[in-house]
Image (tube, rainbow, N blue to C red; front, side, top):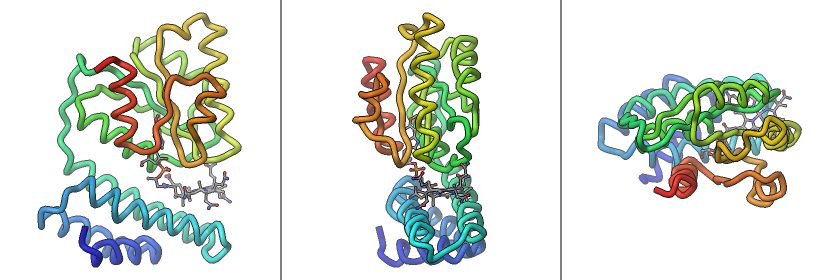
Length: 213
Ligand code: B1M
């Protein structure tokens, strides 16, 4: 990836310059840059830099919100540039960001990667009640339930999900996968999830493994 693109993406997201970010995305894709590399190597580090500045108190909530809006717009453009080849036989995934958590940029990238790899994905969105996730998984008879949590305070919902599945006697019907910035393989093991994925590419690898593909 061209260092100039990485630098421009960082500047556009940190300064929440929507026009610049859209122009950079469109021109890079038109120039033949791989959309996924553009996301992984330029835009994800850019929004993470925003998170670091926010964490250090060098950037405030209104700017974080605007940077996230830029990121959402870029993600939509990158998603449109990815192939969508849904195929029921590859497997069916239900995915949601957990209750109390509105962070959905990363989940959106995971959904795109799963779609691009042939999976049928039912995306329930963000801030989704755990009981609803379980009810929908049963109704849609999916193979895998995936949850994303970005806050240490909302990770517990991933644990609740495992308990509700057990209480309803349906734990064996589904494979579960967890992800999100504060989530670790240790957490996945602790709560009894079947898999943990570090990023969207890893989610595809882990889900294929869970489904024996
Ligand atoms: Co928030 N936020 N935020 N935020 N935000 C974080 C998470 C934070 C780490 C920032 C910080 O302090 N440095 C911090 C959490 C601290 C903590 O819990 N320890 C934080 C906070 C505190 C908050 C608020 C509480 C701020 C406030 O109101 N005072 C608030 C909470 C709102 C709520 O959810 N109830 C809040 C709000 C927001 C915005 C709305 C402004 C916005 C979200 C907009 C949106 O998503 N629509 C936002 C953003 C953008 C961030 C940061 C900067 C970036 C998150 C992001 O999109 N990253 C974030 C800092 C950070 O994470 N470094 C931060 C890019 C994305 C591609 O990565 O989501 O990790 P990520 O997804 C990756 C992997 O994790 C993985 O694959 C993805 C692609 O590679 N993955 C999965 C994710 N889900 C997966 C699921 C899988 C598998 C893999 O299987 C199912």
